[in-house]
Image (cartoon, one colour):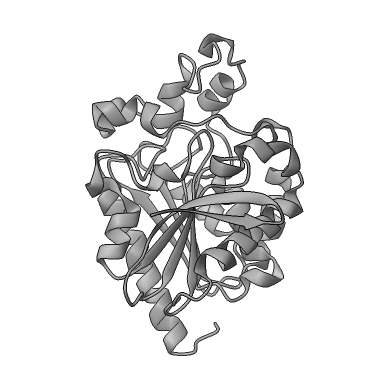
Length: 289
């Protein structure tokens, strides 16, 4: 079900798939150049995090990050990082008002959405989260990807789809996706200006990660093409979460950058959902470390 909530005069949209008596609630944050549809791939229900999660007893809320979806026309009002964090927390509270949360709320994010997720999880309001899952986000850009992504988008001619050469980097091998999915048109969206501005995010990341005191799950595809990947890269990312009681890493087989859109999306989602279930059990046992 599509929903829109108003937070301080800014409409924030989401796709919500509710379980009758949820085991927990998963709030999913999409990456750049797309929307909440990323987690409910049109025409491919088997790839949908929302449908899979609800079928297994989890309510899933895919939130359009500030500057996307219903708030696209308000992009100029969400340039401040702290405000986006406030909007994210407030939107979750509004969307879940009066609804069961089961064991609690778990954050999941992909690529550029990991910035908002880590910021939300690292502030005071994030202490009660069940856990955090980040996917398609690394510590250091792949050398070839950096070269390609540093080029201008003039080739795109104003199209929201990646310019020539960028698609191969932003997706990975085409054989990992259904042909209609790899074209990306069904889930593409213009990115707000703040998304491409030079911000101190990468230098802040280690400090923010070190604040988290909740379990963390980290995934990169075995064909990740945006970030430096592999076991050593995953271990480096995991090492940042020094205060987390548990950090789990996953190199997802037969997957490119867009973990939730590939042919192996169901396998990825099941691994994350298993981690959420483990976090729910941990909460029930009253464990804090």
